[in-house]
Length: 259
Image (tube, rainbow, N blue to C red; front, side, top):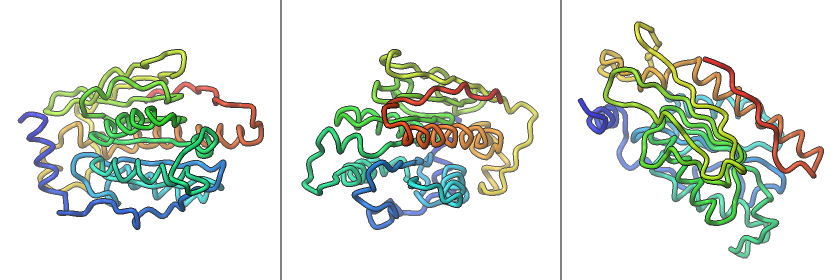
């Protein structure tokens, strides 16, 4: 079974028709309060944006439950990138004139993370924001699947990649690289292994559980998602510290923990 067939199978098992993200589904206000932070997570495959049985959404809801001051958290399907981009433009448009000046482009900080096709969606969104002159603090890719998802654009300050290459139809991107190493710090390309390792996949359909591909195990691996959460929270903490010292434009890169 090849990569496309495996992902199509999961889509057929999981997806609901025509359940795409709409602007009214986004809880974050637009424009966002100046100095606030947006965390956006992209789900993989053809998953709906609010599927709370997938780890991208689970993490977002967990972060929301922390009620972090000035932090807004949203999720989207990887096919909803256009809606997300439009929302970000609205979120930064402080005077609502549909034009972004330099101050508005810097008025909100952004973190993006995603799994499978959602990891690639993060990189594609970053490229689109780069064309607009909008920076991202951090991107995190989990077993990312997509064309050219290995090159991280220069508007991303830090990037982390988690992946697996176990035998199976789907391998995540193994080696992300900075287009401009002077502007982007690659925090790591960390490989996970699932040989003879049981992962609780109770939230996946029965057929997917029986097939047990490593790509799907990784989506359910609590070790992976704890590392993603830790990295995001560390960057949020650095952002909070930067608000107290406005001259800081870039938070220090902390090395990721080993799996």
